[in-house]
Length: 204
Image 1 (cartoon, rainbow, N blue to C red):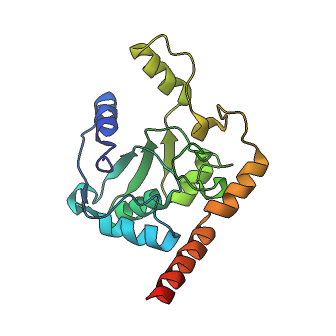
Image 2 (image 1 turned 30 degrees about the horizontal axis):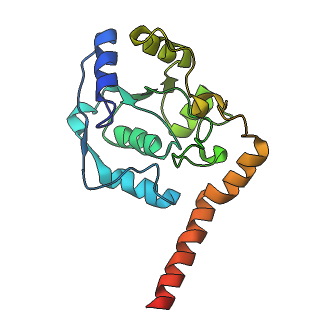
């Protein structure tokens, strides 16, 4: 079962490889934006439930394999696992088409601080326990890179900092992450949002 929309191709390939049926078990509300960049955990959790609904007949009494394009904070994944169980699934397994996102991207993508990434300093068993699923499986980074080289053998290196913590500019260290955490964590964003609201209220 893919998490719509971006994981459909991965889920279809997975189903074909395993010889298992492919089913669209979630219906997407297209008026809700990307949840992983929303400020505040409570808002993200609420948005997941508003964004997706289950087709219960595809979950009830079944063992289901959920496929998503990636797992970032784990907020969406945790809610999806619970929704699958709420719809009657006997067992829930979770597959990520991307390797473990363990480090922030510092080159323009607003990923959270390291401490807010579910895979940071955790193994697959620990992640599965947090998600509430039977087990979780990630794409292997070496396999992912090799699959791209099949299309273009001249490629030698990839920008994969979010998976490895190796930054091409060689100027990112633990001190940088401490400053980043203070600036980007949920509490910092909430303070900034409250300050902006206060300023706007003062002008009106």
